[in-house]
Length: 286
Image (cartoon, rainbow, N blue to C red; front, side, top):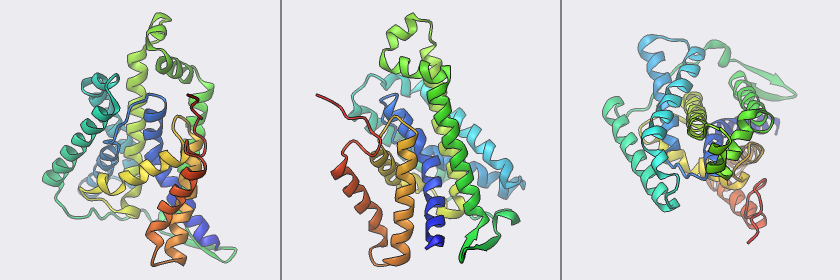
């Protein structure tokens, strides 16, 4: 049982890292970016290329994947996304889906259709027994990264000047500009952070989820489920949802092989029936 719990928490931590940026852009910036999975794929390909072609150590590939995805996020935000902030959500969805198709085609052309196979460092391939459970150091590593990112984001959004400026820029951009808040830079930085976290998650997911050009379409539904179940606009919601869904997914695959892949959807349906706004979503009064 403890093995399933640790595996589930590790899987949930990975989903959280990849999905929390989408929750921030949807909840705080009110922008639906369904190309979020493409940034995760980008980070994964950057990490795999550095490891397989240049021999860069895995741990050094992670910050590079974050930075490359962040830069890509800034470039797209400055050139394309910013033009759609005031557009209807349907336009945002269609546009970002189109970008995803372009990203998939580009990855297929440049990297081929084969799965990327990497070898983790020795210290991440070790296993040990604890209270009768078989636990891998890679799982502890994923959980630790998830905890650090959750704490950092929670502090940054709630306790710093940047977090206050971001909320002000979203609530009333014109008034925020009048108060001297650099709204454009705030939005660009937010997109960079969300895209970078997606890229970091993609690099971390290579060994667990696999990586090929279809990655954005395979796992976008998971990102959306995390955001829907947890509620948008916070860090606590996606974290709780990702952990819940990760444990449910792993437990379903361990104990109910025939329906294991559908357990995560069952959990989503039950949660949204009880709380349509998500676990930590804000109730909208009409």
